[in-house]
Length: 309
Image (spheres, rainbow, N blue to C red):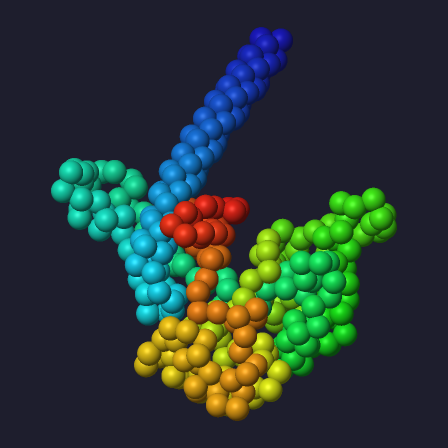
């Protein structure tokens, strides 16, 4: 009887120790998890603040570029990308800032760049200001689709749905009108297939208003598509010529095109831009935060239209 009582007491003690160890392990794990979540959230918030500062710096560069005037081209300071650099590089350059080697933000690496959105074909151009399909832009997009091996029939589909989406606020709009996309990747709402969207992403954009194509920054394939009589060799010739000297006016580009000069017009082409994309990437330990913003520049006023990260 005594041996049984001793065995039961030993078993109870072992169960108690096991229970206490389990509870302690659970509490320790919960504490570790809370610390990790708090650290990750703190790193994310710090990263977002740094990227906000980077966006403000990009807006300052674009504003100063507007003060200097002239055409927008790829040799300007805003067009030079920022290669990945340690944050301490920027802080050490500021004499008023003391660099603390223990600061975790000094172990962060920042990179990014500014790109001209008017270097791409604007899907919004498919519908003119009177809410009718724009024939010149329909032909330009059809030419781009054909060059990329896509179905040109999709151009009419997305143009028709875009017109319905723009007219969705009126009483005469049908209930089946699609939602108006706000981002380029949302063009599937207008009926664009996923395969076509992936192929078109480097060449198209979606801006809130109709915009001309900047021939100083557009790729050869986009310039080729924007002019009905232009062939790809002429587009390559334009791209090579602007590397030597950027086009200050459309007339400068017209001299290169020769007989195709009449196809360049101020409605569809320009040497200036108003819309830009600002990309930022911050790497902090194992955390990577990427942000993309679209800004609109009117004169020296540069405002942010949207941000996503």
